[in-house]
Length: 205
Image (cartoon, rainbow, N blue to C red):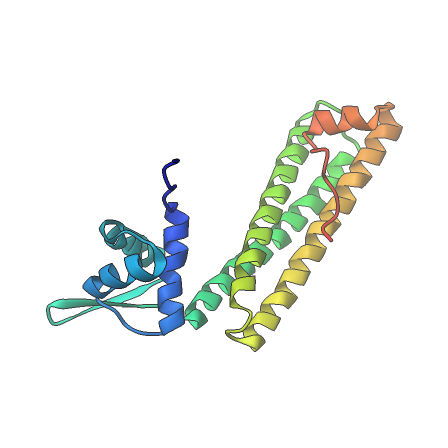
């Protein structure tokens, strides 16, 4: 019989947050060491470490009253943190768009292999990184749809702006590929390979 696989660190963190969100209560460490193993399958020996990692990431609040430490976390704060992350991503997309506009002027006169070719590859990697972060945050937000409808709707609007900005970048990448193909006679697969463009590169639906 195979040995049962234990929970990963991220799974433990997620289940620990569920305890706070489902109960909306304040706990001491000793309380969580009793509740977590029974209700969420988190071993009592790892409760303290998991809890501290959540406190360090500002996902769980803590305070000392007398000789005891108390811990709590509410869904509204989690939503606020994710909203801040989305706003940060939006700021990065705006900054990236400005960099792209500046780079576009030099691309018109550029030749393959010159320094700005490396810049385009770097910008493409940054774009893919931002898309990945946006998709991760979108997945996380789906967990909190019933917590605060107004905040969720606002975040969705911000997410739409970020998506539109990313697709504008995709337009420009295709424009650069078309220009390079006409200017230098390269095949599309040669251009993709030269600039490190993945095969599944496409617009965000």
